[in-house]
Image (cartoon, rainbow, N blue to C red):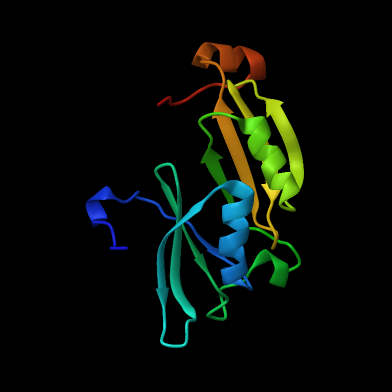
Length: 155
């Protein structure tokens, strides 16, 4: 597996820290359907760098290799980020797959006012994930009416 050219990689690649990143790679594959796309090991077989993909997205999965890198499991479940992942179809089935693999479902699949159906899950070490599937197009005006908020910018 070759390192992809920089021009074909996303501008942002989140890095998640796990106590047991080898177990995390397997769990993320089983629970969320992510695929290991790059794995670098040392002469003893220890993982030095790991990447997983889903659709056009990439995450790195690392260990607690420095004083400032910690899994939520090592800091009382605290998180400073949440990863949002687009699912093209089958959001309810995706949630059930995650539940069966041991994910804690924080919010079951729910239709949102902005046109997505989403669910939230915590993984084996407490990282929080939001999975979403677009189910209908919603205009900025509809969002403003539904929420009372003012849309300042739109994609």
